[in-house]
Image 1: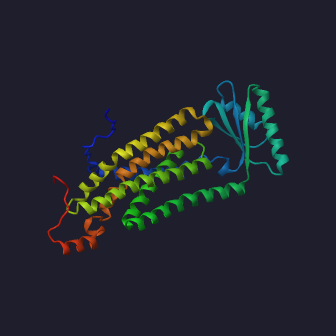
Image 2: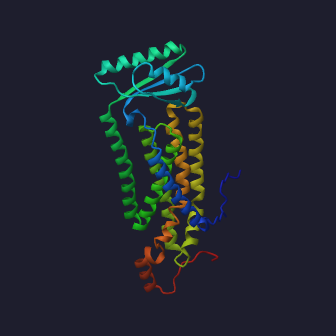
Image 3: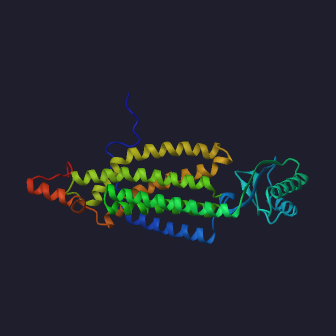
Length: 324
């Protein structure tokens, strides 16, 4: 019985021929994502924004305008209301009332009674409260976690390979995080601590994929010292392509299942991971690899000392790609 191969052994795709278009498009998308985050902002959940959040489900499709008027009539402050997962479930966010826990519970009970009076079919799934001080600390901690993860990863790759590889990995990670943040700015999906965890997971996955490619590039630099850099990168990408496709496809199938059947609680995390896997796979192929050419990586720079030593010992020795 023959084994199923998603990528044939003789695959030879010229990825590097599209490097200028791919990197140019990525730069535009990064700038657009940053602009969207600045202009539109993120729909911070209670974890980051602070305040009172209530998740309510109705038997019929929720009418947001009527519900907003109903909640505002309760006198608990201006409400921010949006659908959550499906048209029958809504998320209601209110400013945190002054006072102790008893004051918060009074506001919760008042809002719930007001909604039930208009919509007896309403069911309240959960209620969360976060103070402004705690939310501010969480925002800072989340940003610092993502930033230091990216910097630490780049330093690791720098010491494992060369500084050019660290720069390439950092740019690829910046690409992945920026596009993910831009997605949240466009869709206004609630951004909470679960999303920060998903982004950190994306950083780790993208790094793993990039290191696999970089490791094969390093091996091929030792084997094919007369090969052009673009050709060598294409060879390395095609050699690692089966692993990339199988790993990414497996993750995509699992995450797509969670997106459609995992429910509203897992939706934000699942859609972030799904998008991140796709973006991370793209960046490992079209961003992390081509940037090495512009940073001047080649056999003469990466293995200059070892190559010189081998040449002195055996001037006639050379490693060339078979059939080249």
